[in-house]
Image 1 (cartoon, rainbow, N blue to C red):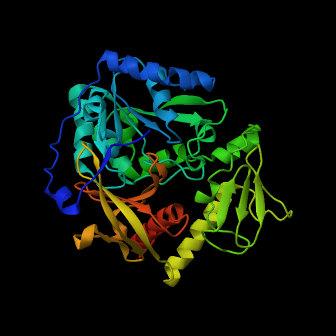
Image 2: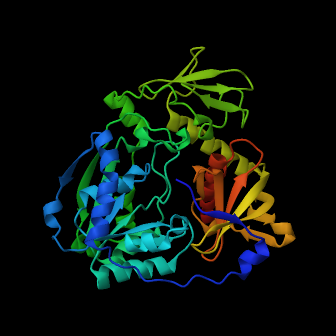
Image 3: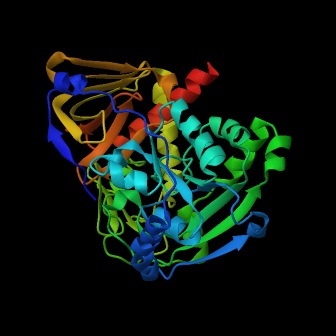
Amino acid sequence: MKIKNRPLSYEEVLALPEQAHMQPKRPNMFFRTLLKAVGASDLKATDFTYETEGMERLGKDEPALFLMNHSSIIDLKIACTILYPRPFNIICTSDGFVGKNWLMRELGCVPTQKFVSDVRLVRDMKFIADKLQDSILMYPEASYSFDGTATPLPESVGKLLKLLKIPVVMIKTSGAFLRDPLYNMLQLRKVKVSAKMTYVLSPEDIKEKSVDELNAVLKELFTFDNFRDQQEAGVIVDEPFRADGLNRVLYKCPACEAEGRMTGKGTELRCESCGKVWELTETGFLKAADGEDIFDHIPDWYAWERQQVREELLSGSYRLDIPVLIRVLKDTKSLYTVGEGRLLHTAEGFHLTGGGGALDYSQDPSDSYSLYSDYFWYELGDMICIGTNKLLYYCFPLEGGDVVAKTRLAAEELFKLKRKG
């Protein structure tokens, strides 16, 4: 999938008119059927099946909030199949509207900026539930998982449930991550995919529970480990490219602690600094060629990297300072390439400069609990996104190796440290 993109100076982008807000609209039956039809071949290829639990509690025409874990692009195809013909609006990232605003609106999609405070989105969701009497599909993690485990949930979700006052249903997938992990360059694996749809909270449950209790329920729902599930079930992923791009996640060698020197290719992960090699086995384990695995589980390695980043932040040694290509999102007509700049990230937050000196943007660590970052984003490259509801800055690293995962980890740990201190 690609995105419309054209060059423009930063001053010209600033001069563009702000896009007017549009209220959500209910997708008609034609578009609901179209979405289901589009996903049919993909689901057939994965031998897709699903089961339900407690769904008899949800009325046929009763609006509900459907929360779904986010593993890959097949997630939406699954939802559009198992929810059909129920009308529902889809909360999705604003860049998905670029070049296709009309179509996305007709499909019932509602735009939002990832990891940016968005009061307008809350109003839109309230409008959907109260006025349209539609259900809502939302991915509260907001971003795909890097290591196959859950990404942080915003504390505001519990408050949202209190405001909407509609039932909550969980859609949890199995196999979707293994079929198409984000690091693996959009190369699909032959893996069976399934889902379970569970009625979780009634309006009465939501009324009785506190916000903290609701958040605890959601945290439990969004606790998972796709690689552990693969290992325990003995799921075979035997594609010869299964380790391609794994260095994007496992960017730091636990043997010599060199960063940005890892290479994931074929079935192996190699440190170009010390020469240590691991094989990603068909059942999802890491096995070192020299017999000393250090980590045999990808999420454990990733958790170690997180701790390493936290220690850098505490010692004051953490610093990202790299040249980037900057693309800006202001409306849904296009993404605008404004040239090269420099992205700095320290304990003080982000600082982006560029646009021939016209762009100078700073973002405090407390502004967001996580970071919108992605691999091979719209086939343009690995990306780090910062910004506001009015302007989003998509930064594509030109040097520095695999910095995207580390920057996300640093943003998340900085937010925790700021809240704690």
